[in-house]
Image (cartoon, rainbow, N blue to C red; front, side):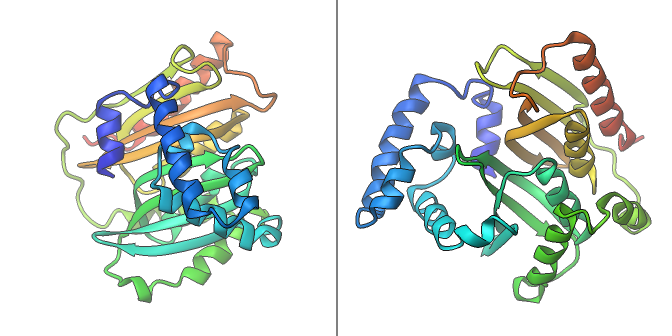
Amino acid sequence: FFKTKSCLEAACLAGAETEDEGRGASWLRQRVAELVADDEQLRNQLQDLPDDYLTGFTPESVARHLQLHRKHAGRLQQRVLLFPEARRGYWSLLMLSKDRAGLLAKLCGVLAIHNFSVLAAQIFTWPDGTVVDVLDVQPIAELKFDEQNWQALEEDLNKAVNYRFDVGLKLHGKKQGFGLGPKRKIQQLQLKVVLDNESSRKYTIIEVYGADAPGALYQLTQTLSDFGLDIHRAKIATEVEQLIDIFYVLQRDGSKLVDPEQQEMVRTTLLKIIGMDEIE
């Protein structure tokens, strides 16, 4: 979380494609190669991984992602797999899957349904179409890590991606349960949406600043999917109930979002979403 927060404050997300990142990725690639030195297949796959993905994780984490991907390659063609870990003060969820339209929205929605708050997230798609998402979460209820039904969470996510679980309807039914107490006024809360086609050569970058509220991530990511935008990278952070989301998106044909009219429609719709939960 603090790494993501520092990166956001330094505006490094908008300038991801830099020479410094390239040098850092080269060093990290060498470290990962040492960890998988006895496995030629993983070393070859490592060479294709994007620089921004490599700089987002430790060498040990990248090596683990590669090993899990190969171990479960067959299942990943059919299912979304979750690998939870208990960390100090939060839980980390690694999600591996083949890329699917609206995948991130469904993941965020299912997490909200299961009473999780997302503290931070790193979302990547490998060149072979493998999605590697790592989300830092906290349970809204007072549950211990081993009390959480992780199998049920994974099953609901797989039902959702296969259109056998209506995430939107389930979230609507939980709205009353989310509002368990009076909302506190948040000082200096930012509510804005920025579309940027200059900072990245490849992607349209959409920055969203709003109030952190249950289901907000689902609404935002589902809206982008509804507009025909695929999320290839994302950085999500929450600080004192301020939600900061940065999405790297492309249209379904692989092009940037450049049409001014559609840009305004996306911006206006996202503003309505984050404005709905604005604290009075």
